[in-house]
Image (cartoon, rainbow, N blue to C red; front, side, top):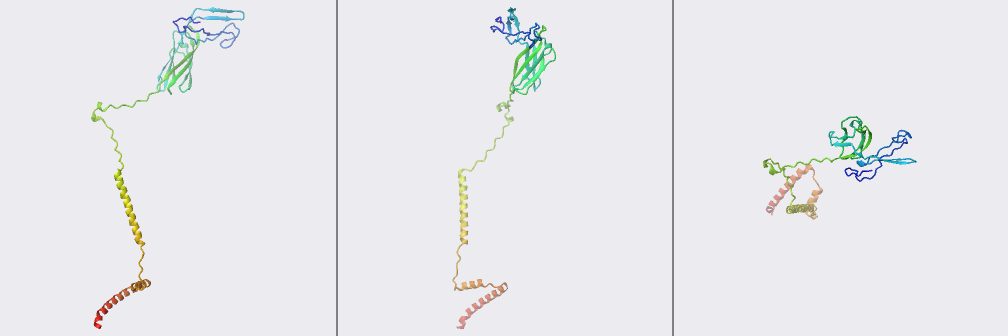
Length: 292
């Protein structure tokens, strides 16, 4: 029962049943009916000043004994962590005790680490030493790390204990990205030393509407003129041929010339005859008046 002392954490706390002792050979009891009653304390109660009440029940009687108040101390196991204490890839977990209550040389530790992603790593520290126990935790993630321990040892008075240490948590913050370097303003620097980035060359602008219209008219006009020339040439090639009258001498001569082609060997003779015939015709014309 709490003494309701306002100077302690258990002020106003409810009654707590911390252990039941039995002689049945079960649990931590070595042998049944040997007259030695054994139990396991559950000290998960607020630290402070308590008044112990022992009650014994048998089929024949029930007895109660009230002892003087006792002091229940808080958890004597002290945990701390050094972020990146084992290098860039490890955090260092430090485990110590209240040396006024616990014999450090007798301390044994069995624990597990739960990482932010849910993975669990079990570990044990069994080497007796007066130094602070150390355990390296892999630092491959950021977030909340949870450490749960079970401690075994002796008090400074030589009493054995097994203690479920309350869960210890620590937070590893997300690493910050490096901020971009901010260039100093030109006013704070020498104007001659300030290097300005070259301005991008302006992209060539398209034709204006007037130039585009002139090009369209010129191209269309050229197409029309070229089409007219082609049409004229085609019409000239397809013009009808003029037929001479059948009784004309020219027509007869041409028909005879077309029907009768001289051989290559007679070409020179025909040319000579034609030349002499012309000269004779001229001579006859000149002689005609004299004959009359």
